[in-house]
Length: 77
Length: 297
Image (cartoon, rainbow over the protein chains, first blue to last red):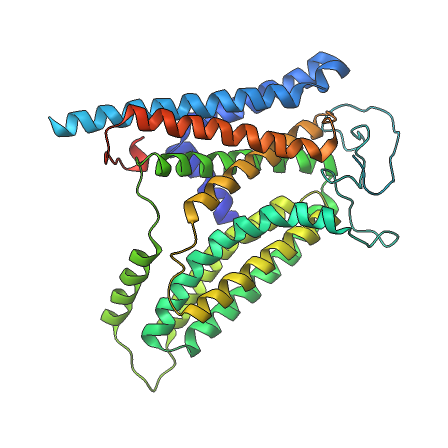
């Protein structure tokens, strides 16, 4: 189990570093919002986290696509 | 939504405080299952099914990988040693789950545990989802069980076998494969079961069912389970892991989701929609057949 958690974290930080950092940031922002915003903020933090993670996934994959396209173009030259 | 009562209208002690309980979802709701207790040992089938399904699907993926290797060893070198290796690894895993899993869910405060497990599930799920999207888009090669099986066969045949001795190579290869893939199953069971009794029972049932299903299918076919749509499963499980992660982390911070666990399908749908959008976007971005190593994207 520890190996699994470790490989996930290492994989995230090395292979998918920006996604991991973005996800940790999103979790931290959500936590800060819940603590600073009071009861009403607590009731929306889940939606805020969901929105942030969805944007993060699409943005990260878009960046991956752009990177892959650049690599393919340079390899074909 | 609470299927079994036990609402506690306690004081609000703030997010991630062990004494804090999200309104309306104290132990008993689907999203906040009850811990093991002598006075409420029953698990209703709906709760069981909801918690067992993600664990079943996620574990099935890992079992397919382990079964492929055990089959390769068995076909090449005989069945005795790999089967003993498989049973030994299963026993090791049972001890890990029994000690760590039960200790974690009984000692660590519930909301703190939910927050930590929610964060881990989200990180774990995002990785699966990203890889599955990259595979669907054709950027990363699809996981090929047949290729892995043939490679394993060739390696084992090259090592040879002396018939009279116990086949330690066969034992160790099977033990290692089952233990390594099994640790991922253990993580999945503990993660999905971290909320306590009902969830732990359901996650364990889901994982055992997946193991039995895959092993029986593998034994019946005597060949790698190439027909299992692994990337589809990883795609679905990635979305589910992310959804449970978001759901639990927000609950740990004090949020009450509308309809409690009924929000989960909505969150899953949002992740699937975003992933589908990402697949379309990547296919539009890249020329056909352009593959790049995952590490490079």
